[in-house]
Length: 408
Image: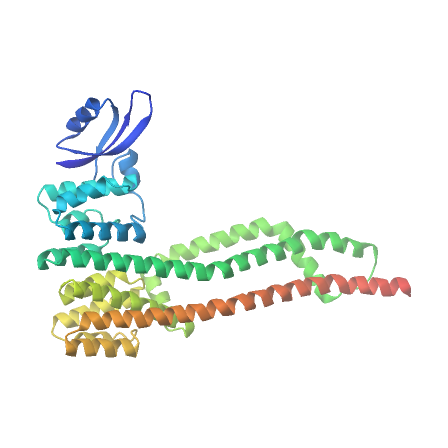
């Protein structure tokens, strides 16, 4: 039995969409006709980017599920399983709940695979954009260990935590970004529209203008005549940088240089350390083998040098080396994290101490980001004030000279 997305029209001509399960598309069409609906499209739900219509829309959605949606699915599924419902019935209850159509489509396809005898992890792996490898690996280990409920709840907490961290960072950066954009717009408007009208007064007088006024007039002329070209050039430069950044070799060199910078490097290392330790804690807590957990955690981090260091550490762990000694060679993890990992290996509580290390790194990251955003606001205000002061002085100085000349 498989899941099918359908689009049908009722007797009043209204379009309806949804998900039905059946042995074939013909059976689903027959079932729709029995309900008084005229089937328009009936397509099998799949994790591959093919097909058309609604099915194609949710499969080609780049982001898959948001962390909030994924957390809700995991928490609801864990609650239903804990109440004693079979897995197939729990998935059916989720497909019949108040979920968006694309969520119900994916869950129906997962249930269809489970009914065919596949494990939940195998069914989730068919939708990598909706359920990342961290989820599938943890679920697979949870199924083998008989701890699926606990694993689901842990994954839900992790997804919610990531959503909160992302939202906090976005809110922290929102005000400085808006301030910078508005400041640029105000200064550009002054230079482009206000200055040309004011400096027309100086054309009737043959006097030497101050250097600041000449610079302001030249800047205004350049922006008015070549503003569109400058924007196009900036867009072309940005596109070229993005294309160059997509090359793995160049991206590796750039990211390695960023990690060595004093402030930016500290932020990047703290973020990667928090992401790595949190992921590894979840996987080890779900009874995933160490080498497999390191392989999955390497794919979670964003920077290529850190990913290469984790993969090298995984190879050393496979050869019998301890995790702390293997990671110490990468020189990207803070000393406190390495100490906690070493203590965790010796005490047998590695997953717990990895969680503690992730908490420490996330707190440090929040602290640094908070300080930077607090400093960015007065710095931006000071820069805008200085630019406006320069414009005012560049306009007022010739006017004062004219008043002196007329008075004389």
